[in-house]
Image (tube, rainbow, N blue to C red; front, side, top):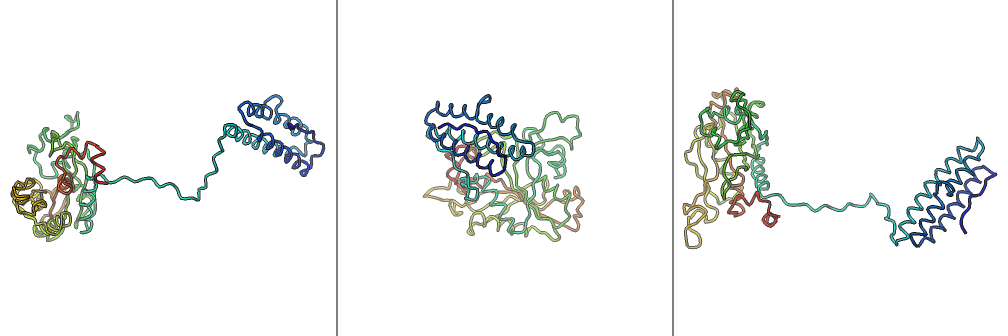
Length: 366
């Protein structure tokens, strides 16, 4: 039997509670009979219609008719009834189609763990390199990719006519012609500016590695990319010698490629180090023999050695830019291309594979 709103004569709390309980029981019975869309619409209109719905009748027959001293209690119960009816009608809508309302979420249960991806091989290699030097007591410093000419070249002992300043090698920011040369902006060609910035804010001793992305105007091919990554290192203290540099890099190469790897240094030139050296490691593919599978080793071109990085003792002129006393301190610096080392570690034959975003390639490193 359909519920009809009674007129109240007793406004006590007990009487109001009984009236509300009767209403809730009647609504529960009526919602059970909802089977179709038409049943639900009829139920909704009977209870929630603006002109003559049950809620409207309750407002007129209970709230408006209540004596002044009872209006507060009646009003509170009318609000509760309104919320209860709206929720019951909404639940009845899902029942008509056989859809069970979703249960409340138990926030005390453990959540669904999101599947984690794997590190990109370049980032993984860079983290391995940084980890080796962290274990030696080096800290990590980073700097901006958009640099000034001063930090990228001048403070690193590159004179204005140095070939590395040529626009064929360096990507410069447009509309910089009206600025002084040292203030012109460019995309850094190495992470060495971070070393200058570090020495400006820190007095010796300094031991840092500087990982990051660098940019050069190189045509992309199997061994070149206009964007690549470097890890550079700097150590400055009293009585730093070339022997310290050799021992540090020999340890690092053994940590990266295995204890059987040998290193050798031979003269080179970098404007910010003097003396400078290129570092080679014994070929990890042929064991330094130059021969593999009955023929010459392709990776080392039958030499038994692979060139890997550059290094040297910090040029005293560089210390002049950061107000270090070259008579009291000395230091060494080194730099290596991360992609170069990743290619060797993972046997990749084309640097472009690291940047193409091919999931089939990247899944091999998961």
